[in-house]
Length: 508
Image 1 (spheres, helix red, strand yellow):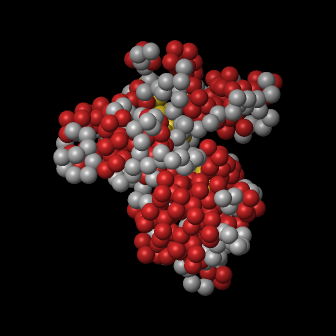
Image 2: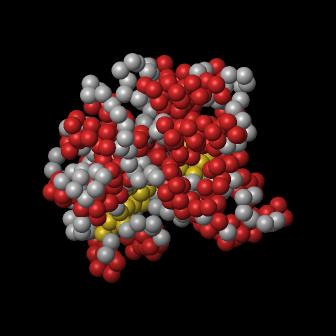
Image 3: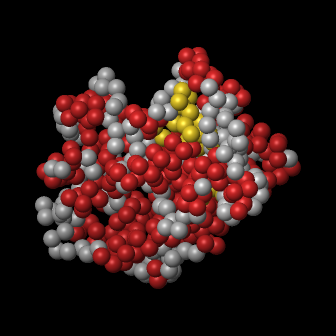
């Protein structure tokens, strides 16, 4: 989400005032509307590189150990690696704790053996950390500054720093005690006051912690993040990186010494945490890295334009994998299954039958549960995670489709859906989209005959496909796909059908 959209969806006036603290003058005296206007006006200060670098330094060298530790985990390791740089607030707290647990686990497994190629550097840095922690349960700002300088000089990665500190019993806190929710929330509030973190709320009343797109772009530039970790992991799984010799060459060329006995997954973990993906693909000079033919073939396989230089094609590959979406976890006792089982009744607004089945109590629940059941179809049965949507002016769902979106909207009606009655609403969603819309799905009980003509007319005038699919057809498609393909992702290109959806075109 861009800065303006984030500001317009900040949940409370107190949250607005908190983020205004960073750069808005006299923010305490302003009304909510005035605060929003002032924040949008001062937006460039929030993503100015110099300002952000100063803010990150304040976090890194702060007297508060909690702020030093949690801020880096929240901003660098978690949110900048999340889709749209946002996560439900409660889940973010859980992921901070999980991250800390993983570091402690790694520290218990990590051994600096006599044969370790970086034995001397790691032992020296561990000694420096041990000395700094020797007399107190805190490290001063000056000590932290010196440690960071030594870390950079010895080429110690951030993961290694945390692991070694954990081995000394001082990560994430003294005696390896994990941070609790209260401590994490306190740091998040401080990050809001610094203008690094914002809190927004969706239609269901769920709070999300988010970094606006413009701020995230500058932070990624500072941290030299080219591809989010989930996408980088996917990229590393490609067949072109099955050669240990190639991985060794890239690692050693980056100045990291490793033993030949390391396994593929260990080598890839080193690359993931220490080497930029552009270096993995392109090497260290124009004649290095993967061959031009390999890069060309990869771009072609991804369905991207192959024009340009080798560097251009590498950039296209990185952009593709940076857009790779994390698979969301689904609860085993998903309540949406009940709504999916009554999907056609929800689409047709069979209110009396839905009440008898205890699916709804109030009539208003029909539309919401129709939407949630559709989420279930795409996420679980068709294995394509919908995006989390913030605010009210948006379609019922959005899916990522290469560098574009596929949108959908549910129309729960007792009569056939007449597309012309809703076309202006759909047009607003399409025109306000941050990315081009490849197809707009309309899901309903049935459609009037003239709706097909309306869909064709819209495509001719606007170059966006409108596809109409009945709830019955979508449900049958989802069940058939799940039965035949299980966890394979449904190719979303099948939804680019102008007019009425034809399930006979699908290859199972």
